[in-house]
Figure 1 (cartoon, one colour):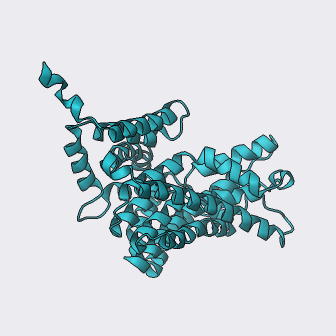
Figure 2: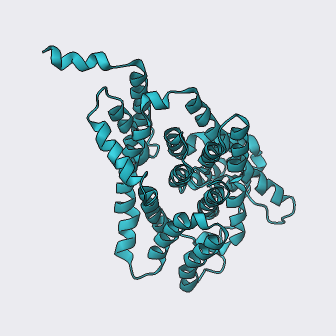
Figure 3: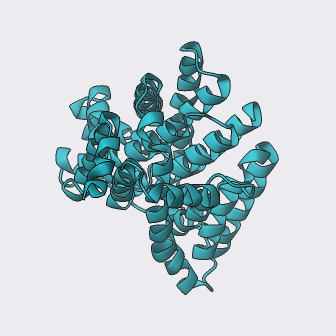
Length: 367
């Protein structure tokens, strides 16, 4: 009988702390319904990997090597991008191309945080990997940090996916601090402009891939898989495949990716001062991205006759479609007839593209 309890003596306090962290992630997923497809497997994986002498460690390590850390690149994040691309409708962006400006502005925090992390003593490759957390785009964060060989991959992955899920908690107070009541009540014209043709929708992902490939070659895999998923959606002849990519493929890969991230959530690697600093820097990048998007809208309003509701600038981060929904709900809370969804979705999809380009530029500069 003593053999049955022998493993209890291998239990350490850091492992127990990781159980608590995993439990918090599970709580947020179930009770608060914060991106449960991400946080639930991450939380459960954190518990699995931190059981003493866990038999799951080898399996999760194999999943990590096959799906993320392998000679072919970051396989699972890239496959997930196909599903994300199939979910995205670029119509609001094509109808109003100036929304792309907000996606670009909302990446400013990435480069600002990169500089700050470097000043705090992180190696330039680690600093660049930490900065990309601000994109609020898990697959891009994984791809960049793996390509740059960051030794903080676990903290970066957890921070990136956690902030994606915590958009409803983090963004509203920042938006309110940056805007006045009068600005939040601004109504925007919801009448549709000239709708893009089917040919335009088909050519858009192809043209974007080619342009990004010429400007930032290291981003081709990221933008290519994203745009391929969108091409499946828009071509009109692969409807069943598009639905599979949006639902079955995206959900399945997200579940496995969430558990796989736990491979870098071992107590001895995760519970360090550097990890806490990285999570703090990631939050700073996320906040600064939101701030930059809102402030660009406020700046543009100085010159525009038809004012822009500055809240939509916050949707320029890559957390699709969470950020767009947050902005839309905040608009309805201020005025139940103020529908900002079309505009915030347009900004949000532009942020998805911009975050991938930002990741590609970082790889081009530092890889």
